[in-house]
Length: 587
Image (cartoon, rainbow, N blue to C red):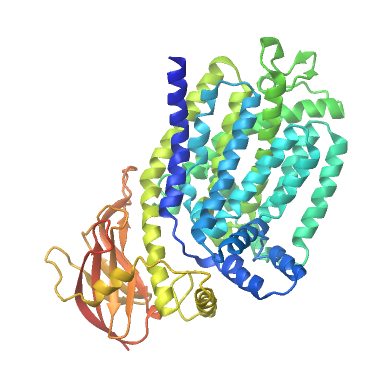
């Protein structure tokens, strides 16, 4: 019976991991998007045209905005060296491997404490979240955030095992993966400080100072003065933003107003931080007594969560007397401590510098790996610091919360992942045929730069656009007039562009199912994705409401007379039904 139960638990625990891998492989599109161009196509073009080893190394370390993506660029170059191509799906998968590595590190650290294996079940449900799909399905984010998280965890793992040299090497990797990797030095310093390894702390701090100086060497101004000015005018947004960021995994109604959307993340971020503050005090208070001869006794409500085997006030702070493996608990505690200090520093800096771009940034998808890790570490710290009924209650609560979040995430973020794939394919078609679409305003200097860059890539057959929409374009060319009676599509001119709406239609379910509006004349066909209207009611189990809409920017097509119409793709085949709904003239 025990073997059967263990197998069932293993299958249950692996479920989110397998689904995560499936989603990455299934919904990844070999298409660059927005910020991808600088660190991948443009970098690769410069790499190909550069001469000499030193120039290539300089390109590898050259900053992209405020980040140095050494590992991301290195992986792209390695793939090009082997295949002669640039493939964004490969970059997505490569980023995913780092998160799989993070799970393995957390599992190994968890095993130190000799806790029941089933206590680990909430971890994969919290860590492998679809909420951060803009990390694992967007190349630049995939190879920034996921490597940083992996190398931070690796560094803290090695520090907890007293492997200082290797920990510094892993920290250097985190340092140069992206800008927030520099906060690894804060986490490691905290671990060494509370371990009272002061010689190691000096070496760590000196290494960190050199690494941070090298990171910012030659980097242009980050223009954070305006963020500080915004903070002084709106300090409450930084305060609330800190908790919204940490509680970001409770962003379970992403289509509601920002006030409604962030209410639960702020509340839950505050509640979890109460526990985290108590847990951090269980390290700080005994250290103050030992180091500074502080006379205040450790409060019982702090003392009860300590995992150190050392004594304070004549009492054992750990629970060696009750038979638990103190060394393994201490090692897991220090592992969690280092990661937590990194996460809190990262959250504080983001809450300070990012609210000026809009409070939604606190719960944006491409930051969500950090609140996921925050909940993982908070949970592990609790089950590592408690015994008996409190420990079991923590496990039950952690499992329930993780599964509920995971289920609601599938409802609200699963459709977004599917629709984003179609959106990228639509824009890739327009980019290939009309020189715009992949994230920049048509006709802007950035769009012209992207067009020339992609022409360089395609002419040399380094990159090939997906051909998914070619059959659809042929069908659109042959579409005839005649809208079905059940559909009431309208087009009207508004300041932002052409607004196309239908009050009651719904996009049929399916991997390749979708709804699109097209403009065509004798020379060209332009395709734009129609979006299902978001649901804004009280039912948290609903994501969409009836009705379709989209806005076509005027800059997206030249002046002239066009037929406009609708294309539905109802099934797995790249065919569907299309019709011309009318014509329009843009002077």
